[in-house]
Each structure stands twice: as structure tokens, then as C-alpha cells.
Image 1 (cartoon, helix red, strand yellow):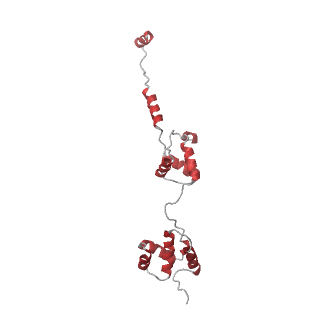
Image 2: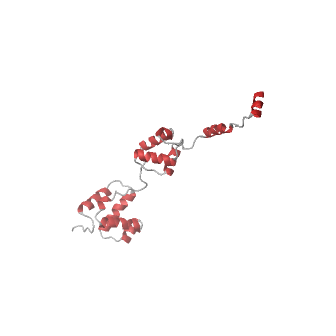
Length: 177
């Protein structure tokens, strides 16, 4: 008796069965199982009950099988895409340890937004300001100046210069001192 296949080509069915034998994450395994069950004529409700998946997931992968795209079962990655690699981290550390003026900017302190813009232009990887701050925190770095630097700047600001009119009377008082 011949295997009745409703949606999959023999190649796709063989590919899915072969991948099912490998050590896959549960989510990928479920994708393949949904398409194989749909190909065997099971309804969406039957598939959801058998695999314990939500109707939306089953519907999506049934449609993928029906449209002849079952071989693309691993194209939609699971989870947040990894956009930050080791070279990105190294470059981020390097930028934070130098003044933005060294790179042609007019401001004296990096912000996460400017770090993101600079790295996107330089490396082609766009990352949100929140994620940049998270990365900096993980590395023990910050775009904010250290506390001792803030205190030093405040001490400089506390030295006030007094400017006054040096007319005849005030000039004589200064000479008497």
C-alpha cells in the first residue's frame, strides 16, 4: 500500500522524516510533526490535541505544508535573533573607553543612542539603546561619568571668579591690599 500524501512532495516528506530523527529542539520537532500530521490528513483540532500546541501554531505550519514550503521548516528561527557578536562587544568596549571627539563628534560623552548609531554605521548591526545599556551593564561599563569625576567637576565649578568694575576707587582699594 502506498503512502497517501496530501501536501508534501516525496522529497519534502523524506527530508522532514530525516530531520525528525536528529536531536532537535522541541519547538522545531513540533513544526515537523504538525506538517507530517497535516499531510496524513489530520485536522487542526486533532493535531493540537495530539501535540499540545495552540491552534495558531498548527494553522501556520499546516499552511506552510499546503503551500509547498515544508522544506523551509527551520527558516523561522525561534527566539530573539542574535545580532551582537564578539567583534561588536569588543568594538563597543573600545568606543566607551575613548571620547567621542576622537571619532569626530562634537560632544564629549557617549550616549547609548550615539553608540548604537556609530556601531550601526561601522558594523552594519543596528541595536536599540536599551540593549546597548544592557550590554554595557553586563560588562561593568556605563556612558555616565564615574562619581569621582563628577565631584571633581563640581569642585572646579565651586571656584568662582569675581568680576567687578575697576574704576578709580576700587583700583585704589586693591592696591592697598
